[in-house]
Length: 252
Image 1 (cartoon, rainbow, N blue to C red):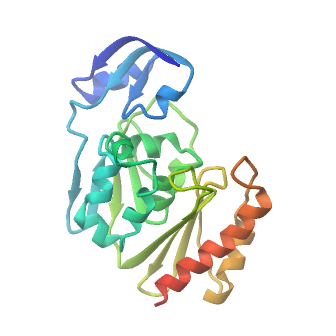
Image 2: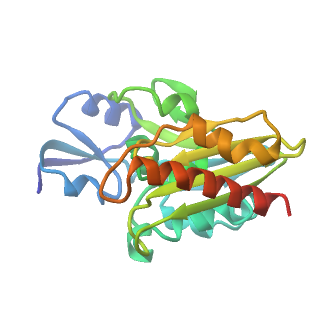
């Protein structure tokens, strides 16, 4: 159970940042994961008045505000077309529409949850995160950074000539995934694979071997663990399976 002593709707990012420097205070987004924790929050800091609930598309990039919801990401026609439907595939299994109408992209990325479909999806792309004090940081680096009191402002996806494919395995529909995989194939035939729900946070693998050897190469490079949704050995097997399925889709 979560208890909140005070609530503050921030009027600026600077105000939100200053409030967030106190350990007992928390930034709140959709609050869907936060409310499942047993914590006492001093001041809940609401970013909803700062105009961060938008997805902007230019010729070079998508700028996804931290308060944009997963449903917005799922339904954005430009992002859906750019990702070849991978974005829609990645989020459609996340609980239900009501949940996705509340869950935010910022919370999904900042949390760096092992089970995050959104993190796996974005990691396979040329993605940066914009931090209020930390500036622009590649997502692949951000995933490895320790948690701090900075504020994630937006996610920036740089457009490239590439095709994408997303696959996952779940014990039951809408459950947390046992393993996730997003593949990117660039115009020169190079591949990137993000593998998540290991059950640790997603990792990026860029094999340089022949395509037919990539499932085994990624399988070898990715460390897996065990939890109630699968053993390390099962996840290691799934890694090869999902990489192969992504390649088959992208090579068509």
